[in-house]
Amino acid sequence: MNRCPTPAQLKVAPTAPSPDNQLMDRTADVASRSQTPPAETTAMNVLLALSLSHMLNDILQAVLPAIYPVLKESFHLNLTQIGLITFAYQLTASILQPLVGLYTDRYPRPYALAVGMCCTLSGLVMLSQATTYNALLIAAALTGTGSSIFHPGASRLTRLASGGRHGFAQSLFQVGGNLGTSFGPLLVAFIIGTRGQSNVLWFSLFALLGIVILMRLGSWHHGKLQKQKAAGHPAHHHITPRLPRKKVTQALVVLLALIFSKYIYLTSLTNYYTFYLIDRFGVSIQRAQIYLFVFLFAVALGTILGGPIGDRYGRKIVIWFSILGTAPFTLMLPFAGLTGTIILSVFIGSILASAFSAILVYAQDLLPGNVGLVAGLFFGLAFGIAGVGSALLGRLADHTSIEYVYRVCSFLPLLGLLTVFLPDLNFRRTPTAVQP
Image 1 (tube, rainbow, N blue to C red):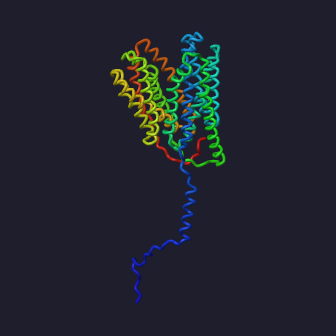
Image 2 (cartoon, helix red, strand yellow):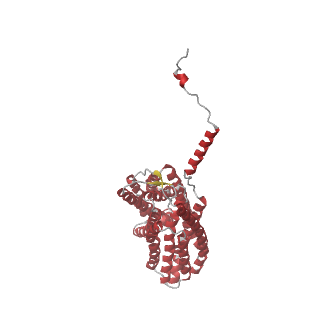
Image 3 (tube, rainbow, N blue to C red):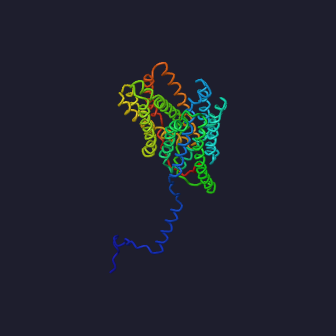
């Protein structure tokens, strides 16, 4: 007698897939993977070349202020005329940067960086051969123009080569600039010394090396543009924020205020730290220079650490820590002894320097597609604040004392409280075109 099958008996036992089915599955898997865009990788060679070119650029930019004593004696200049030379340089080095960034965002020019270095080279050659005051002004303006062309374009290439590690890439780029700013005056003292302005011509060798490096970077950028053009709309996982215009404007105002806080305080240390140590503690000029080097080394260390930490834990956290976190140390500095001052300067330099990369990348994320404009705006503002701040702090020190300057500046990091008004950027990875 036949019995009805039980539910257990109705279950179909799994069967091994046939070789044909296995082949079809593998083919489908390969096809699906081939349609997935490959992960973007960090172009380390490009980033290192950009960092090196940043170092060369900032070495060359340090030549002009470093030879002011030579020019003052050779041309019998007064301090007002020296100030006008600085104004001509700052005008082109600061104000032009956002305009250059805006233009290159809309119309990418792969070889613009090499053109900028050619402007710097022209300025240095004219500076070495100038026989009139007007020639000095033109040389200063040409040198500043080279810097204005360099920074926005190089920052865009840095982001393009970052492979998504925007903070790390920007930090590596910034360290090159820090090294150039530190080595520039030393090289001027060694190469030029008191031998006269004609020795400025030796620095053209640095400019020529920079042109070679930037031409190669231009070729790499040109290749990227050609690939993008051939592909039409290549898929690229890019972090795109979705924020109202009002919030973006508010965030940019806060970031600019934080840049003001950071660079005014850094200027007080970079330009007047040795005078402070000599006046308050009676140290020798040589020891004061060593302590300044310790501070600048801390700045370089903080610069390279700030970007990767921001990549891992978020830009806003780094901005909070790097600005407001400096306040306890700056507030203690005017009351510390010599050993305490040196230790505090290391904490201040390393923490405060970590801010710029995080601020710049945060601002670029706020305004996707405007990488050059943002870089030009923030680099230009940093240069402008450093120049104006140095003059104002010097005047304040003349009317009061250098110790009073540090007591006033110690409150600047408290502006880091404005970070509370920065929105949390909740990014969503969406396929968008690579920005050239």
